[in-house]
Amino acid sequence: MDFGIATVAAITALVYIIGLGIKASALDNKWIPVIAGVSGVVLGIVALYAGVPDFPATDPLTAAAVGGASGLAATGLHQLKKQLRE
Image 1 (tube, rainbow, N blue to C red):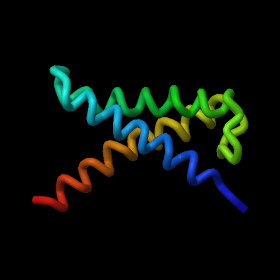
Image 2: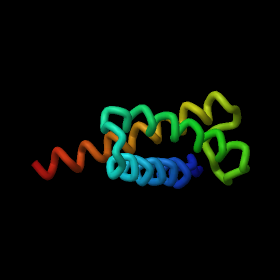
Image 3: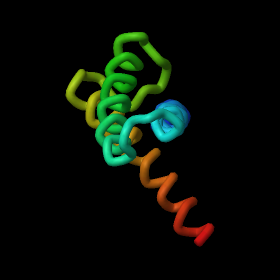
Image 4: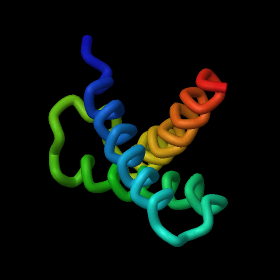
């Protein structure tokens, strides 16, 4: 049984790239987690309505939760990488 792990990982990767773009911009870094969470929610809902195969949600609320968690996971991955380098 596939739980849509590839879709969740894809959302996380896309939000990670969005976060890197924000970091390179003039916007204050304190907004990155908020923007990452919101971007994840949007991408989760888009994935639901685009009919992405094996997406692990069948309703908008669950899609928003999956996307938001994936978006915030991107911030966590960045922090993990940063902490391991130090």
